[in-house]
Length: 383
Image (cartoon, rainbow, N blue to C red; front, side, top):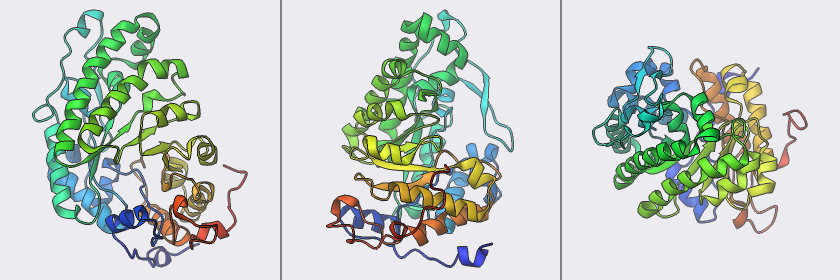
């Protein structure tokens, strides 16, 4: 068994900003970018549980800065979560002390409720002002070293917090005009938060679990998801151009990868149920790929050796992706994940992702020192 002393023995030689800038110049870097999906669920590692974390910008900052300082991840920031925009629009949430929030009662139960919906004001409604304050505080602490960004739920996922998901799915078939009406209001709310974040200088990404092929057909994705995500992304581009836009969709998404790339995103993040190798073959020349170590089976329930093997496996699948690659998890790491398992993830990237260089800048297969190219995939044929 690998010792904790060994896991902590490798140190970064560059800050995340230095690493990102060097990659953009076509240079090899100390290691591959490492961005496990963390957030409020990591608060307990710093003695901070979700309920207090969600309502306190200082505690949000403490956790984010702590994760960057301790683990060295290649990003920092606070997102709205799946329910932040819905809450700002009037949805009441329940905040358990030691678990993530959930909807107490939906806003939309009948057709008459749809007309009552109004876009939120992110500068004053719900917890969005707290999130914006935390972003500024995080940026003041570590922004010189690491990029600070925010993440928000895609429009359809917000709709599923405003009304029961089962009712939403029924209306998508029987009353699609009503769902589109709700989506227009939600998209306006999202765009207002985008404006608030972008004018402060922060990149904005999206998590859209309700857009998954585990729930929707490709046809439904193209009708109820793609146009509204496109509208949000165009709002970002007004502020930042085509820079720093990430899209993560949980569950199966292989049938919509081209649609996701059509949106003009920079990074495409996939769940661990899908194959990085397949994604590389389909859209690897259109986006930087992100993923996809299992957050539950590996990070939460596994041991350091298992996590290291999964990391090597994923790097072996995507190290040569034409658009670049970021080693990450397939979704957010859950509450209760041992600290040593996050350390193992970072160790694997530092050891086996050393010398990474964007493929488009490589003169030939020997024009870099990336370690995992030269080692056997321990999970080949298993995952």
